[in-house]
Length: 232
Ligand SMILES: [Fe+2]
Image (cartoon, rainbow, N blue to C red; front, side):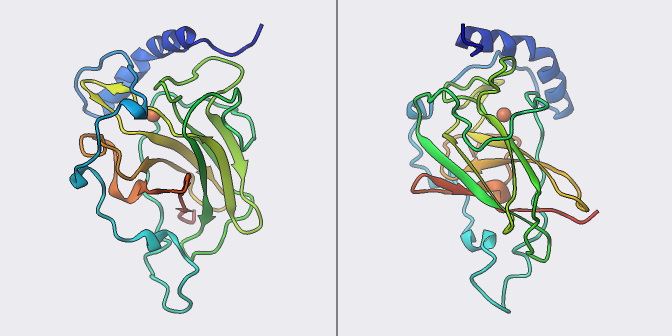
């Protein structure tokens, strides 16, 4: 009745996607790959090692309005890109709520702004995100496009999504840390494909793709990710 993919369907889809994933990983010079597994955040090992978390002390780097003329000139440096991965789908719905079936999970608001290198907001920029379910599975087939959506920035360059904290999936012998994929487009600027990572994730230290500049903390259920685009 529902067009919602069952977990089995999603797992099959993930398996079907394996060749492309393997070739993708080949490009990334990774070795062998196991079938996608899952590990809900609640089953992850404790993250009591500070080394696994980024040591960025520059939470202010994403904040552009706290210093007037003495603003950090690096605050709006173009956001670092990151791999697209094999699970992007075209034509995701325009919506802010990604938890279309009210699945259980740790509620999360993803928000931020899209800026130019001068820290000016980019109005009407398209922000597209996708991530796996808390179980670690991507919806690669269903018409519901679970955990996927697009939004357009408002007159202050802001965007927002409501979702739950993503799970993790196996990449070879290691779980990838929780992450959210992004594609951002704005007129007159270079499009960006990147990923947002979570401060303190116990797998941050073992992932081959993660970049420190892309890690943010979750504060009171909100993760803020300011994106800056290069001019064309
Ligand atoms: Fe991913």
